[in-house]
Image 1 (cartoon, rainbow, N blue to C red):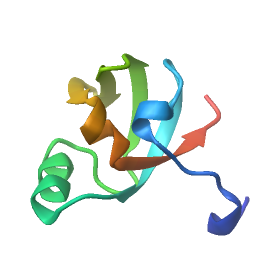
Image 2: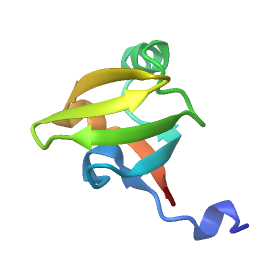
Image 3: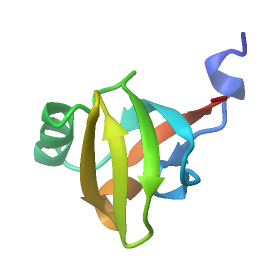
Length: 82
């Protein structure tokens, strides 16, 4: 298993449609981080990007959620083999 330093992270908005990722870091101000955690995007949550560019549709904890591109840009994920 690769160590954390060798895993390439990218913002959720750059994850390809249909791909899985694990949330590794939330950026932005504290209220934003708290709100996305409440939506299910906490660190170590598995997320699948369903579609989108300006509005990102993703699935987390069995629910589909729409995020703005700016919000998705602040959620860092480690892509997973699906």
